[in-house]
Amino acid sequence: MKKASTSGTIVQEYKIASSRFATGVTITTALRPDGSPLGLTVSSFTSLSLDPPLILVSIQRNCRAFPDLRAAGFFGVNVLAAHQQSLSLRFASGIKERFARIEWYRGKTGVPLLCDVLASFECALESSAVAGDHEILIGRVLHVFSCEGHPLVRFSGSYCGLRELPSVADNVRAACA
Ligand SMILES: Cc1cc2nc3c(=O)[nH]c(=O)nc-3n(C[C@H](O)[C@H](O)[C@H](O)COP(=O)(O)O)c2cc1C
Image (cartoon, rainbow, N blue to C red; front, side, top):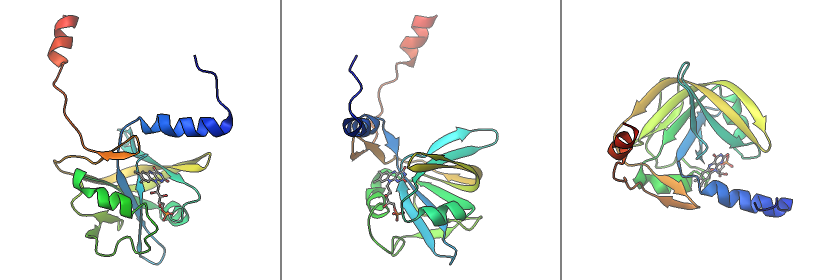
């Protein structure tokens, strides 16, 4: 087995190894105290519990949106479709007006929701936990929307689509019988 590396190297290796875990891409949103929308690209979204329905996102504590997102009480998670790579780039960029010329609306809780996404979750902040330089925000899901479509996938530092594999379920079932 490979020996543990020095700290600088382990961070680099950790980043590369983590990038081998394919994820979807979301835009996580909330309202600022002045009523304007905030949003940032987030791939750390995970569904957490069915009963009650909980999700989590993990947010860098030093990013600009964090204080307002943390304080908002409600937040939205918008799951991007394959054709929405430009939204992922936009909401991770230094652009000031990220919502300018973007189609969005306010959900039932008031959180900003993006149009044309594969799914959206409106959440009330249930709890949070500091974890290193990030904070895990756990949201209780109050309202959801979803539709058919192809997801935007992030893998190994690139944007990808999904390719379905032929099912091996019948072979597995036969082997187990
Ligand atoms: C594909 C992708 C996934 C990302 N996932 C996360 C994430 O899970 N959590 C996070 O805090 N930042 C994540 N980021 C980085 C933020 O989107 C980025 O730092 C953003 O500019 C923060 O915005 P702000 O500084 O205006 O708050 C991701 C960026 C990209 C491109």
